[in-house]
Image (tube, rainbow, N blue to C red):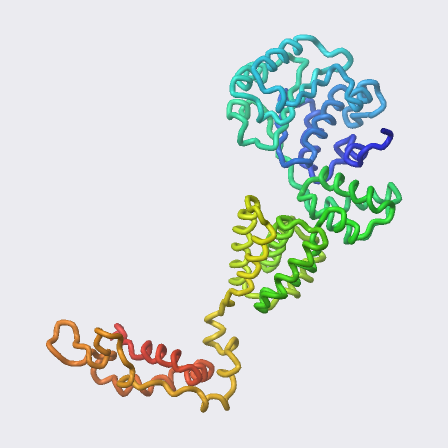
Amino acid sequence: MSYQAMARRWRPRRFEDMVGQEHVARTLRNALVRGHLHHAFLFTGTRGVGKTTSARILARMLNCSETDPEKRPCGVCESCLEIEKGASMDVLEIDAASHTGVDDVRELREQLKYAASHGRYRVVILDEVHMLSKAAFNALLKTLEEPPPHVVFILATTEVHKVPQTILSRVQRYDFRRLTPAQVRDRLLLICAQDGIQAEPEALEIVALRADGSMRDGLSLFDQVFAYAGNTVTADDVRKTLGVPDQASHLRLLEHLAAGATGAAVGEIHLALERGVDAVEYIRGFGEFLRNVLFSRLQGLPEGALTLMPERVEELKRATADLAEGDLLRWARMVSDTTQQMRDAHHPRLALEMAVARMAALDKVADLRKLLSGEDLPPLARSPDSVAQAPVPLSPDRVSAPTGIPAASTRPAPGSGAGPLRTSPPGRESESVSRPGTSRGPNLQQAVEADPVLGRIVDAFDATPTTSE
């Protein structure tokens, strides 16, 4: 096969080509230039962010024949070319996931007794080092702490919490960052410009978001789309190839949920699945969409907190400005629970449709502060002409108590033989009747007059005795 995958063809050859890992590149280059290079390193981070690539670049820098450290790796000397092809005898790249036993570590220690054949160092790259057994880690301890002067260890892992503390204390740790969608998109733009590919900006945005912080995943996904679409890539090509739901579909679903339109909400799900979108992928994407809606309203978030292109944030805020945060939080919780259920469900589509129907049927939350200020009153309460048509509150003597429980007007006071239970101190009965019209604002007074239940609640609150006396 003459074709080489984009993830391999565009793999960085120098630290300057790395995206998003400038802190690692600068530290290692400065250490090499100053001659303060450690003998053991640990590279940790999520998949596809450049851990193994950085390990190979460091190996080339260590064994490059270029005398000026600032120019390493030169990329043209024999050592650089051999390491790039994976044919160097001085670089041992071992997959710890398939060499987990103590015998594998003992065999490695025997090989390290011999000096480098061409370069200055023998470099050992242990990928997915957390997969080593406990006995293998113990066998590696002494060599890792005091290796031969010609040996450098580079350990790489995606799960650093599984690496024993005894190993961590013997290495220099470098944490690789997840890439932002903008960084992945910009890299894809560069690749398209170099390869002569015409790609819509929205198409690259979708791929960058789907990459989930991994440059390797982004390149692999774009390679798949390129195989389908050719030199002209559109957003629709990306959705068809990867089965990615359209963000406009998520926005329409959110609008249907806010309107309580159960049929339209379930219909939106049906249309998305008919276009080939996976049910689990759709609900996962909708959960990510709700997260972006909530986070777009927060101030002071660090860069990359939103899995959204910066230019799309204001557009999303405008489209969802009327939604209550309480509703968004409830829907997000239901989406999280549904995603977990669908992973083990025999009929994921049915689970998704039922969850969407439940979300649409929920009553919407109300802001009590807006209600009391009159901003969020129903039309009946806002109309002055409708006040006269409001039901007349029942008088206390007409309110019947539940069976077996005396009414409040006739219930004896605690500790007394008889007498009604007072709802206000002596001498304040008339005050409790006249207070509502004088101590309430116009909006609250209007709401009280329109809603008899709210009126009785406020009357009871006004009649409560104070302790300031």
